Length: 537
Image (tube, rainbow, N blue to C red; front, side, top):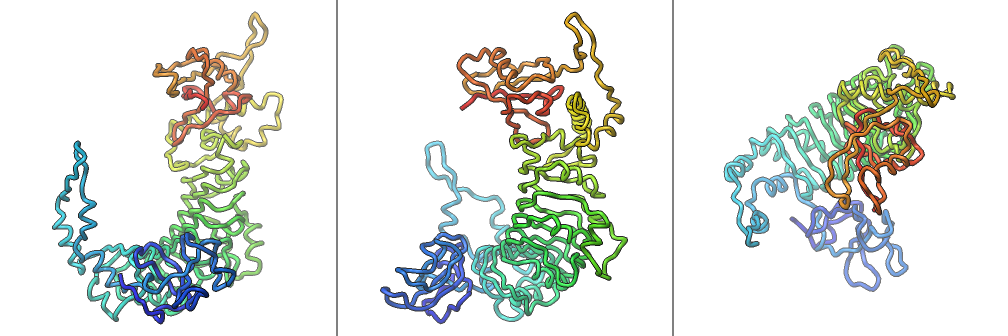
């Protein structure tokens, strides 16, 4: 990697990396003397926040770092101002493997000796990669690319490039991105993640062929996206993760217009807290996937005409016939703060929504007072994929039956409960489930046998040892506390306190059953459910 000991190589706000580590990237914030230390120093604010101070040393402020320990002073010879696009291309695809690379290509034998690994077809692969004019995809991540290089050099060497990954380099000026893209007429996918891009978008031509643009962790905001919109006429996928976006700022209207081809918008790991901000995206006609995982949303709802009209006000460009989120099929909401059932039920109003993620929200976590998967499946009428798992026809039917019986058990003595279950009557009639009738026995009124659940108890506790699963018929009103006592008897536990988990179809992890007052029906245990019996640690 190129480096320089000349301080004139560097300028304020320039992106640099450590000479010995191209993944250690930062921004120049100071160039000059440091009291008590001879020579010229460069003050760098490092992206990873792992340095020595906040820009001050011995009581003297030299620059403002982003955090308490993200700044340090570095000698010029220990910094690199980067290399050109073509230099990086040669390093990645033309250079022969280093001795370090070769040393890594081994396995250990039974006697702990290194045995070299010969990759099958290695020479053919290297030969193909060395013919750069045939490359259709290139990854130049973390190589210190800071500029496009000489005019027309890129188009001569890699004329057929379609996909380009420039993650973690030193690019910051949009005009440099434009120069690269203009020389790659076949380019359809570009990844600029982890490049700190300028807030001023100047010198960027229309990117006529870019269908996929990834701008994760680039510091971009929605005001800049509005500028980019006119330069991306055929964009289909736009990824904007980790940019601290908290609002959808629109210049001329309160609704986002344009982006006629946009199918996927990724806003994960941002700071959006108000659902009204997301409603500004409701008129993107081609939008099929909206990724909102790990924001700060605490409520969602489907907008009616009154809400939309209030948002647009006197905007004459607003199309009254446009149905909000008319083609949205996938909505990822994992890792937010949603905790109300009304938000879950509102998802039924989205016309084409079938793929939903709600994991890591309070409402979907029974351990935090949320509801189990089977209740989510039953309440979401059209969901086909929930939290990344397919909802099979069998799972849907079983979930809806369990849900109806759960609601029926709660309605006894509390008829107002039905208001919390908008799909209950519809499902009860569709499934043909009749109200339970009491039968009179020698001890007075009793519930019918249909109130018994077949539950499989499976031991997974190391100290219990390997024991065959037990299938027991239990009343649905059995509490978790009572079930723990029964498990102590079933598995002959004396000094071990059991810890129970519900293993649900479609859920990647079992659900902890820690509310000892809750009944089997309350926590979603139905017929043929499996309960894992572990031990308290």
